[in-house]
Length: 340
Ligand SMILES: [Zn+2]
Image (cartoon, rainbow, N blue to C red; front, side, top):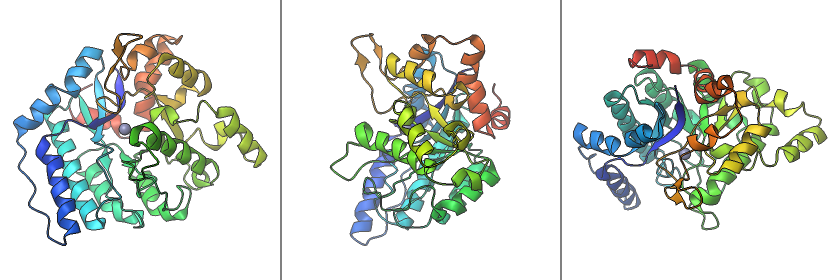
């Protein structure tokens, strides 16, 4: 079985995102948000059958761990109330997709974060999504300010109430920023990769996993700059008299394979222990074109994995076993959804 642990609902029916624009406009003008638009089951069906499901079938993957559009989370917009209403709407749509396509999608929620507002605020929505919808994880934005990094780093106790709930529910967090509102950053080109790299470093310099030995983070986009600069991170940890990174972080930190060329995948698999790598593509997402050098979509990451010198057992861990281990509720949820 091939589990893609990183997919967003980037093809949601148009009125969904249109409502978000109206909601934020209303907030700016001090008006109440308009009622949420009706979205029919047929519209959801069409958006998936002609989008993610089609690509799953074409590329030969089986299941996508599916969450709301990351750039659309927009935690820097509005306030805690608008974030809560938006997260509720987005997560509900994911649940409807998973209900319609229970063999192909399992849900992960976005959190109603707001810059400067305690992550404690996210607990109720996380709990609702996991316990009522059967979601198996969440996306945690380490920078709700959208490129200004105004909140404390991930190792800070500020985040602990949320971590306590993640551990209690046995769900991991994918550390995933949203859109950049700082013009110095390009959202998917630099802000995402900066977010990944910064989050890893924040974990490295903290005692987070000493305090939460079972907390699990997935650093997406191949870990940003981390695997490429593994020697630098190891050296910094050594200078700080920290344990080796394998001991200090790799029981808790995992990387996905959203790297869009073969040399990058080769490096990832060579540097990071295989037990810490989860298959993912992030389709349909940041890079939608075809690589003229290969004739295939950049984000068809399975093609690169197939070229790595891995044993069948290694491949099975990367494609399936590691995801089932990191997403502690996944196997039970799949059984419940009647597939796999
Ligand atoms: Zn993503």
